[in-house]
Image 1 (spheres, one colour):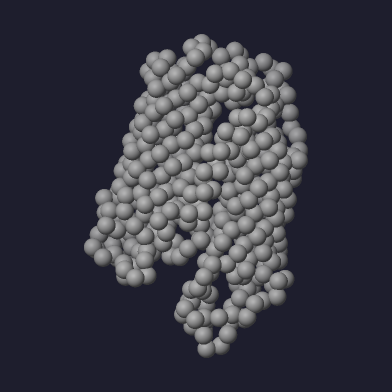
Image 2 (image 1 turned 45 degrees about the horizontal axis):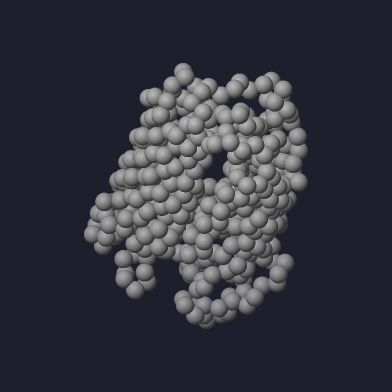
Length: 395
């Protein structure tokens, strides 16, 4: 899972490259940015989604509570720039946190490093607004499953997992330099099926935060002109081509008995997605998805008499390990980042694979057209299939 940490480092570099690259007007970074530094505390509950969390663990204790403290730094764009005017109030940055589940001997005390972005979508007054916020990063320091310690930890099998979160934030401006925030957030920790067991951990929390604003402008931003808004909201088409790869684990049924295949299997894919941009915030469209999975369709090729760590399979023909599907997508299009959600159906798929699939992807733009793609594909909205780590180009 060290590769997840390396991938997250690329995200930090991408922020800098995006700043040095082209925004739509190349002026968002031409003047001072409005920086914000803050702290946040959050607490809530852990849905008990598997037996280990319900108390089937070495200390017979349910895992139902979580508390975390965070340190964050983010920025708003130059308010006189194109991005600053079109996306008033949008902020993006980097945060670190540390959390406890009050059972350190079972799950440890993991800490996270993450990128995040948020924006207001409802203004109640000049001081009070409601917005969304997402986070994506890596969580380190889990006490995880070890085949030699017999703890039956079905939740986490690696010391590093992905950290994904989505929430609502209520922001209240105390003064020109201070903000308070109150939030509600759903968070998911998982290794993306790169190692088993992978039950994952989910949390539902409420938060309170205090932010100090370093504002070099200290004035009301210039109003958005109707001409600029009309240009940005003019419908148009774009075309995303993404190449990705990953590694995964696979379990199979042999004589009606589940068997975990030793080792890890390669995954490679290609996606072509024509998308219609309806305005500056939203796009939707379809995609042709093609994916090869080294572990797909292997059950009929089982070598009779092999089991457990010595289970073996003949290599299936390449064509029997190909998925080809069509999917519908909706995308939140913001500066630097876009968040894409998809629902798809494989009309060609290997034996034993689920045809109905879902995906969630974060696109981090290195330049105006080139982006890093970090995605997660699953079935039945809960069964992990594989990560989608790669590069994309927007035409």
